[in-house]
Amino acid sequence: MGDLVTVFESSDIALFAIAKSELDTAGIRYVTQGEGLQDLFGWGRMFSGYSFVTGPPRIRVTAENATRALELLSDLSR
Picture 1 (cartoon, rainbow, N blue to C red):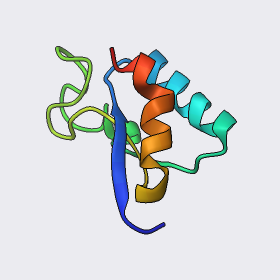
Picture 2 (picture 1 turned 135 degrees about the horizontal axis):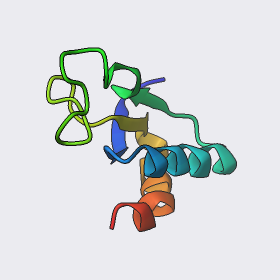
Picture 3 (picture 1 turned 90 degrees about the vertical axis):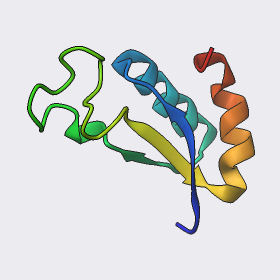
């Protein structure tokens, strides 16, 4: 997939799902990082909404799609 750029991160699973849906609709391929690991270690999402071990889940896209993806997801980051 080439160089990857993080375009979204959130401990809110609903916002994370919406972000993935927006990218799917736009036809932008992405990978998630840390999404499946949130409850794997210790207390999982206990106090912060995300695992302190793995950090919040992230969505990453190729560098050539980063600007478009950031524009699509800008309303979710506010």
